[in-house]
Length: 352
Image 1 (cartoon, rainbow, N blue to C red):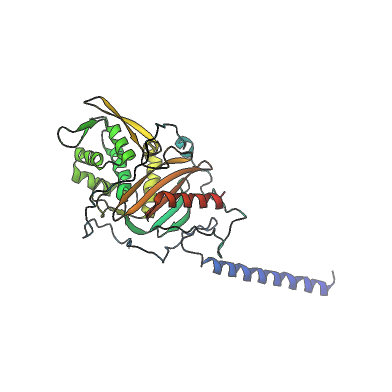
Image 2: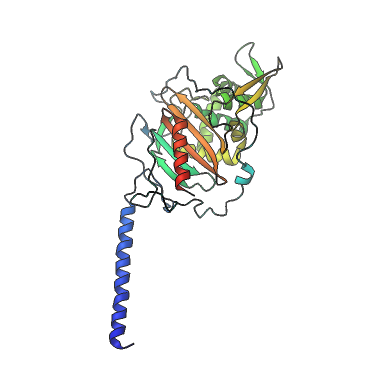
């Protein structure tokens, strides 16, 4: 190669490097403008909140339990489903999913090549009607979608997930527990948990709190939330009737992770279509149908739902997808089941 050719070759290399650097820089700049409710599968940094928040949710500020918002929502009820058959089959293998994740440093899922992308390389987000939402992989902690994830919102009966977690952690559930005043109905501790999680009965949750000491129980709920790192969460009762029971999608993700790791019995119960409980004095058996429409369906690993006048409809659901536990949280919507299905379908269509 003569000197002229060498000079020409070096010039081409320098020009190529410069052009490559320019385009890489342009791509990074565009990536900073990704829609804030999306997390790219290749972007390790969490997305910012969606600034187009609607409704009455307030930004997370403190964990103060007493405000003028401490209003009792009377007559709270969760939508019940038709009577369903007992289904104790496990559709989410917690034993397998709880094994150490050797791919923790890597994404388990990646965008499919055919999916529609935003300017920053993220999957086009679904349009949902909710105050806050999230999709994440419980095993890796990887978040794939989030909307207003740090806005506090009334939990309604999602409260009962923490109520049962506290009972499993700190209470002797081998003793019989009475629901209501005299004469009342008495059940085993385990059946009380079934009643709380399957039918969302407020009286059963209050029965647990009264056995423990109600004020101490509420203090225990807030203490456990702090232990879980739920810094924007507050509990004022064990049922979710109080609008002061508030949390965020981010905090509820932490609750779901702790349930998944330490209290899988909660998922075992809530995934069932129905359970049978026995009143101990009368020896009467009663079949209870799960109000969660996902219960007993293929791929549903457990979760809870709640409704209140202030909260509207909330849900926290775990699904088994590609043998991994995928968490979907939806807060403040008219149809938490429909929006959950929409988010899960979007995730399956975009991430493999």
